[in-house]
Length: 136
Image (cartoon, rainbow, N blue to C red; front, side, top):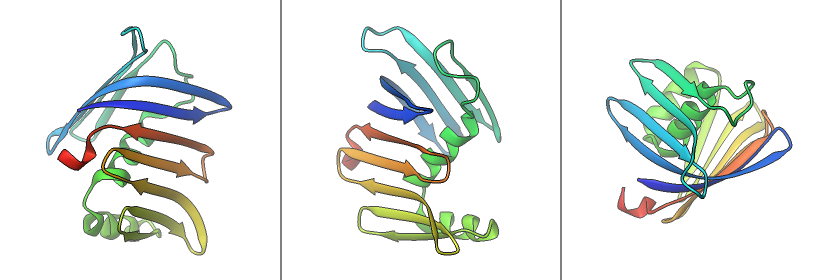
């Protein structure tokens, strides 16, 4: 699926297009600027993540991208069980997911048919994905 990404990370704003293929075997992302130039590529297969980019800071951890994608789109029942093992709690309702450690809100996710917004309070970043999520 094609997605439009607007992100805020380390005091900078990023705007890009993403081509995302995700299924039971893994995930592939190609990030492009508005002129179609490659800004980065991510591959997640067999538990290993590879990310290459000349644009994004070296401090960007690709594991966070994969984890955020899973938090946004994976089955909430499976996520609850996995997060519980890490001492975290997932609250999921209609179009909203919240992840807590104790009473501290770590991550908020809101989803509509054409947008997903994630705010990571713990790590200090946020982004919005725009696409046709109602069709997925």
